[in-house]
Length: 442
Image 1 (tube, rainbow, N blue to C red):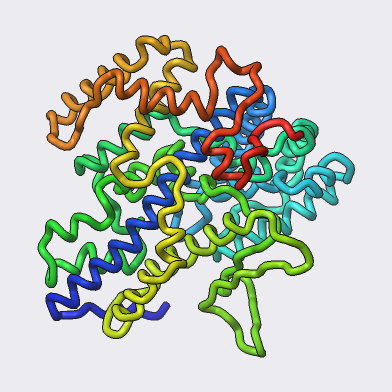
Image 2 (tube, rainbow, N blue to C red):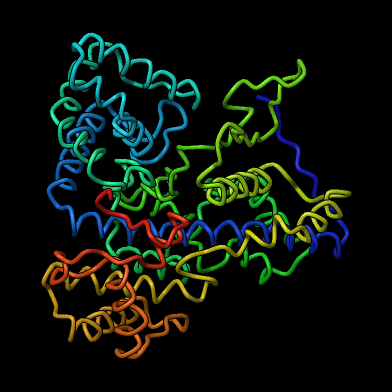
C-alpha cells in the first residue's frame, strides 16, 4: 500500500484556518448524524410499540443470524485482517429481505435457487468491502432456512406497512436504550471514554494529533465537538447495541426509490471513456417526477461532506476553495436541515426523553414519576464519575415537558396504541408529506 501524504501548513494563521474548516465540516456532519440517529430511535420505538408481532418476527430473525455469525468468528468491531464486522454482515444478511423480489424468491423457489442468490448477495458485499466474507457454500442452506422461516411475516410487512420504504429490516431492530445512549454520551463528553483515533477520518486525525503545532490544545479538543465524541470511542464500537450506529449507517432513512447516489470507487462508472474513480455521481431519472428529491439531495450532501472530510486536508489553495464551498447555498441551506435537534445543546434532553419513555414502557416507572427517576439516575452517574462540572441536571418538570412528552408525541404510549397515529414532526421530516404517516399503508 502507498504511503498517505498529508500536508500541514507551518504558518500559524493558515494552520488555524485548516483546523477551522475541518472542524466545521466535521461538526455539520456529526450534528446531522446524531439527529438521524435520534429520529431512527423514535421510529423503531413506534414500530415496536404499535406492531409488536411484526417487530418480534424481525428480531427473532436477527438473533438467529447473529448467533450464526458469532459462531463463524465475526467480531463486533472491524477485524482489519480478516473480515467485515458482525454488525455490517448482519445488516447485509437481514436486508436481503428488504427487496420484495427476494422475499418472493424465499417463498416460491427451491433451496438451491435461494442459496445461489444468497451467495451472489454475500460475495458482492464482501468484494465491495475488500474483505473475506467468512461464509462458504456449506453455510448457505442454513442461512436460507432461517430467512425462509421468517419470509411470510416479512412479506406481510411489505404489504401492510410502509416502514420498509424508509428503513431496513436491520434498522428496525437496532434499538439502543435511552439510558445507554445518555451514559455513553456523558462518559465520552467528560473524557472517561476517550476518542479512538482509528474511528476518525485521516483529515480529522491530522488536525487532532498534529495541529497542536499551529493551535492551542484547547482548540484541538474541539474536534470532534464534545457532544459528538460518543460516536468515536472504542467503547461504542465494541458495544453490542451502539455498534449498530457506529459500524453501519442503519440510522439513515432509505432512498431506495427514484434518484440514487453512486460512489465511483465502489461502482465502476465510466464517463466519456474515463473512469470516475474519485467522483460521487447523482443520478436522477427524467422519465417521471422524483418523489423524494429532498431526501436524495440530503443524502448526496451528506455523502459529499463525508468524503471531503475523509480526503481533503485544507492546505494551500484548498482553503480558498473551502471558503467558497461554505458560502454556497448547497452547503448552507441543507446543512441545518435537521428534525429533532438544531444544535449540539439539544441532544441531552432528547436522550433523557428516550430514557424516560423506556422506563414507562417497561412499566418500571409511571409517567407521573418518571422525571424524578431519570433525574436520580443522572445524579447517581454524576457521583460515580466524581461530580465533573459538565453534567447539568435539569429540573423534573423540564425533563417531563421537553423530554418525555415530546417522545410520546412522536412514538405514542402504551395506553394509546389503538389510536390512529397522527402526523408528527418525524413523519413529516421522513415522508416530506403532511398526509403520510409511518405505519399501516392507506
